[in-house]
Length: 261
Length: 275
Ligand SMILES: Nc1ncnc2c1ncn2[C@@H]1O[C@H](COP(=O)(O)OP(=O)(O)O)[C@@H](O)[C@H]1O
Ligand SMILES: [Mg+2]
Image (cartoon, rainbow over all chains, first blue to last red; front, side, top):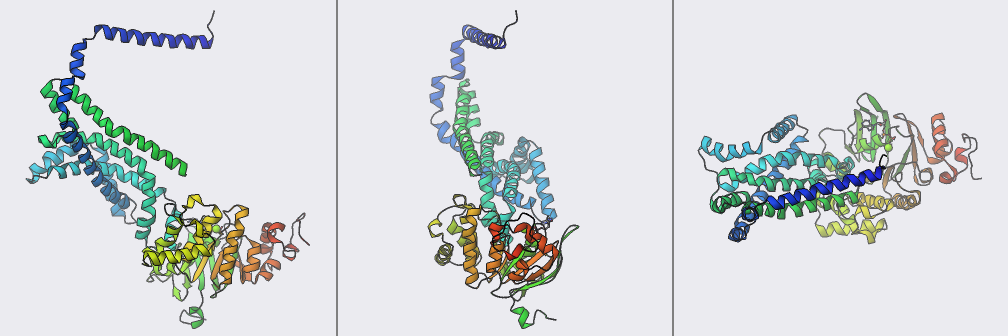
C-alpha cells in the first residue's frame, strides 16, 4: 500500500536525523580527543597568543584594510568619474584599468609591488605604501564600477534642478549627485570593505617583519612555533569579529535604503 | 526688424526667434517665435508631446536648440560664448516632479545654491531662505527632509528654492500635474501670489481656470508650433482654430473650468456645464 505524501516526508526526515546521529556517534568514538584538543583549542597556546594577536595582528589587519580602502575609494571615485566623462580617452583609460585589475589575480599585484617594483626600480617602498597600493589598486577597480552605478542611479532631474539654479556641472556633481550616489552605494561599498579585510591577509606575501604582522601572518607564525592549529582558529575568529558586524551593518543599510524608496 | 541691440528687445524677459529643436530624426519644435514681456504671465497649453516642456527647457538651455535664437533679459543664451551658469541664476525653474534634493532639509535645499553659486554666507542665505519658506507658507517645515513632505509641500519648497536665487523670471513646467487634486490649490495660490507681486512667469499648465484667471496671455501649442495665442478670454473662450477647440473640449471638464462660454461651441455631447 503506497504511503501518503505526508508520511513519506516524515519518514525521509527521520532517516536524515538517524544518519546525522550515527555520524556524530562514530566521530565521537573514533576521535582522538586529546590530539584534537591540542590541535584546535589548546588553552596554553591560546594564552600565549594574547595580547599580541590583538595589539599587533588585529590592529595591523585593520590598519592595512583601511589604508587600502581609503586609497581604493579615492582612486575608484576618480575612475568612476573618468568612466562617465564626456572625453572618450578618459573613458577608455578607465575601462582598461578596471578590466585589467578585475581580471588579474590580486596575488599577482602583490608580487609585482612587493618584489617586482623594488627589483626593477631598485627602490624600497615603505611597507605601508606598498600595502596601500597593493590592496587599493585592485579594490579601486571594483569600487569604481560600484560608484559609477551609484552615480547613474541618481535621477537626471537632480542634475537638471542643480544646473537650473546656476550650478556648474562640477558643482552639481559634488554637491548634489555624489552625496546621493554615496548613500546608494554605501551597502556595496561596505561589502567591499569586508572583502578587503580578508584580502589584507595577502600582505603576508610581502615579507613582513614581526611588528608588521597581521592576523594571517601572525597565526601562521604561531602555528610554526606551537605546532597547533589553535592560532589559526583564533585568527579566524578575530576576522569574524570584524566581518560579522560589518555584514550586519550592510543588511541594516540595505533595509534603510529599501524603506526610503 | 528688431535686433538684440534694440532697446525694446533688450527689455523683454524672453525673446524666442526661429527656434527649432530635434532629437535625432524627431523634430519637436518646428520654428517657434514668441516673446514674454517683463512682468507678464504667459501660460502655455497644448496636448502632451506637443513640445511645451522642450520649449521651456530651451529657454534656460537645459536643451540645446538645433537652430534659432533665445534671448533672456537681454542676454542671448544661444550665443556659444555666453556663460550659461550665470544666466541660469537669473531664471527660476520649477519641475513637474519637484526635483528637491532628497539628502538636504527644506532649508538646505534653499541655501545650497545661494551659498555655492552666489557665495552668500550662511547667515545671509538662511535669512533669504526663511523669508521664502514663509512666502510659500512652510516656515514650520524648514528642518524637514523632502520625503517627509507631501507633494504639494514639496512643490512649494521647490518654488521657494527657485525664488531664493532672486530670479528675474520663473519657468514652471506643469507644476501641479504630479499632485493629488486636493493639493493643487495650495501650489496655485502661491503662484497666484507671485503673479500679483509682478513676477515674470512662463507656465506650462493644464489648469485652465488658473490660466484664465492669472495669465496675461495664453499660448496654444500643437505638434511643435504655436497654433494661436492671445488673452485668455479669447484663446480659451473663443478659440479661432479647430485644433485649439478640440484640445480645449478635451481638457475642460466642468469642475476644472467653471466657465460656460469656454466650451460652448465645441462641447462634446453629454458634457455637463454650469449655466
Ligand atoms: N531628451 C529627449 N530625447 C528624445 N525625445 C525627446 C526628449 N525630450 C522630449 N522628447 C520628445 O519630444 C516630444 C515633445 O516632448 P515634450 O516637450 O516633453 O512635450 P510636452 O511637454 O508638450 O508634453 C515628445 O515626442 C517627446 O517624446
Ligand atoms: Mg511636458
